[in-house]
Image (cartoon, rainbow over all chains, first blue to last red; front, side, top):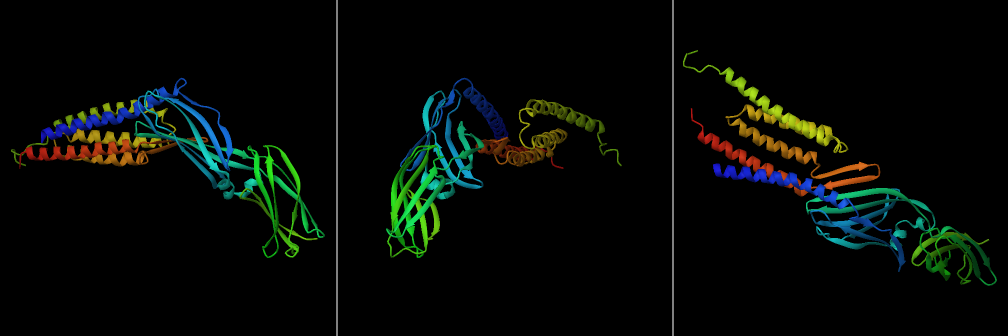
Length: 255
Length: 144
């Protein structure tokens, strides 16, 4: 029994040494990583393609520490007031000790999903809350998470969307004069559709135009919508779409 | 009272108390050094001062009690209780291995559940060792 007690005693001592030495060596490892130019994040670039917005951040890490870095990832949560609009997550590759890794952190979000969560973002500028977090695990044992909350200004792509409507009873044509400011950081390009419905919610006419509005530009155009004269009622429902996004819905009463 | 009955050895007891006190004082100095080294670094952790006081005073109490109970089976029982205390304390103080510190808009989280699990295993081994020591002590003690 004495031998067992002795063996247990030594095991306990060795385990305590390991348990106490690990966090200290992890701290030194991180300090080594933080010094010099071992870690760098280049300026992010924004891309828009196929209705998806992508944020690309080139990252390089020269792991001069003692331990491997695993489970690395970047998570960005964008919300308005208390509502989460979009959550982006990207895993980063493992960085073995003594190696340098060059990678690009690409976060992609569907603009359709983004605007479906809050359609007012299409037409109204807003303050968005951003929570950006970086997560990684050192020595496969201790995980670190650094998160920062900040606010960013959102510029609406159809800011101050206004229209002037006139109806020509002789030709059964609605004439729209549409204008808006593209406050978004990306250019607007895609089909814009105007659909008209009568009081029975029956589609009486529609037209579409192709938008190509650069960021920060003002847009104004007049379009005509020929309608089915039999379907026209006193109340006309106007619905505007950009790609598959519902931009505006409003009612118009014939004078 | 018969003359054969042993008189209480007050001198021996006083010596034991003084010895326990000296050992505890040495440990107190050690905890004081730890406090000076960590207080500035870990001051931003929530309830750090309270948690440090609990662990330092708790372990100093056990050091005193174990030193006082030297040569008795209570020494091992106290060691087992100390291990249980450490398991409970470590789990509570480390928030089950997840610590969070906030600096204005920045939130820093450290998760060390595997390390906490290892510390709990060490204390379970300490309990096993204490039990074996207590059994061995009882086996070798002369019966009345």
